[in-house]
Every structure is written in structure tokens, then in C-alpha cells.
Length: 136
Image (tube, rainbow, N blue to C red; front, side, top):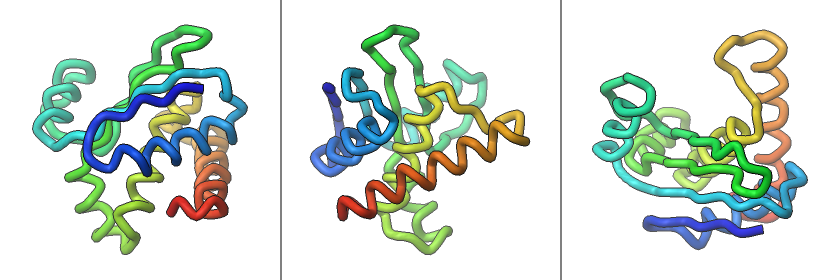
């Protein structure tokens, strides 16, 4: 497993990503995570999703057996959402990382229903692993 993280706070995010990847059975995959601000996330969101606003997390699947993909997290959004949701910054960062990772793994919540429930359940399972490992 190889996890590449760029940005402030990368050591903790790398440990979180490694734990979540193991929880998904992706010990042999490679993942890239970029921790950045709203401006860069807004630019990527506009370019790849046609939405001219910042978002909290973006996922870019590679469609490769080994290279899982890229996750981009806005640390600014994470900080404001942590306050809004009444959780720690680390917990919100973990939730965004797990959410992005699940999208790369093929989970989807956009259509709602059973798929959304399945994704939410897996998100809670992986967050539990991160809590058990004292990463959040």
C-alpha cells in the first residue's frame, strides 16, 4: 500500500488513509491525497464538475487495478464544517477522507436509497476503525 499526502497535516491523514484502505481490503492500492484551501478546490470543482464554488472533498478515480485515485480535501471547508457539526477538526477531516475514499471504491450516495444507505453504513464502519486506532 502506498499513500501520498500533500499539504499541512499529512502525517495524520496518511495514517487515517492507511487504516481506511486496510478496512476496505485495499492493502495493495495506491492513493494520493491533496490537502488544500477553498480557492484550489473551487477551481477543480469548476473544471471537473461545472460547479463554480468550493466543496469539501473531491474524488478522482484512476480506473486502474493498482492506482485507486486522488482525493482533494479543502481544509478550510473541513474547519468550518467541524464547527457547524460540533465535531473536532480531525474527525471532520477523517469523515471527508473516508467519504472520498468510498467514492473511489465505487460507493455512491447521489441517487439516494439503498446505495446511499450502504455508503453511509460503510462510512460509519471505517470511522469506527479510525476511532479504535485512536486516530480521531
